[in-house]
Image (cartoon, rainbow, N blue to C red; front, side, top):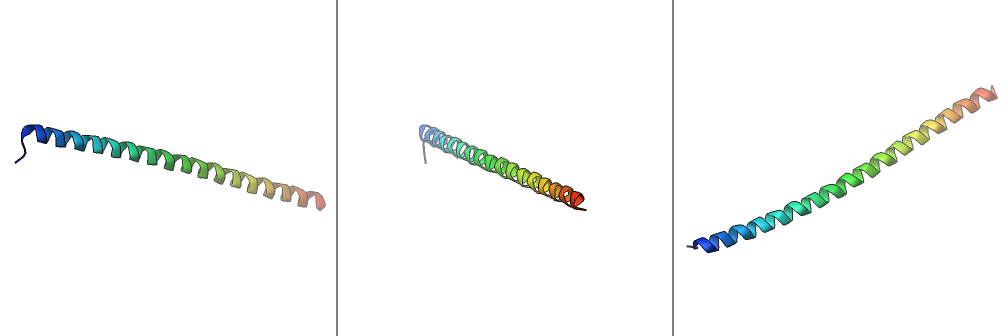
Length: 65
C-alpha cells in the first residue's frame, strides 16, 4: 500500500494533468467560438448581398416598365 507522501504526489500529478486538460479544452473552445463568429459574419454578408441584388433587380425591372 502506498504511503501518505506517495498518495500526495499522485494527487498532485493528477491535479497537474487535469489543469492541463482544462487549459486544452479552453483553447479548443476559443478556436471553435472564433470559427462560429467567422461563419456568422460570412452568412450575414451573404444575406446582405442577396438582399441588395434582389432590390437592385426589382428597381431595374421597375424602370424598364
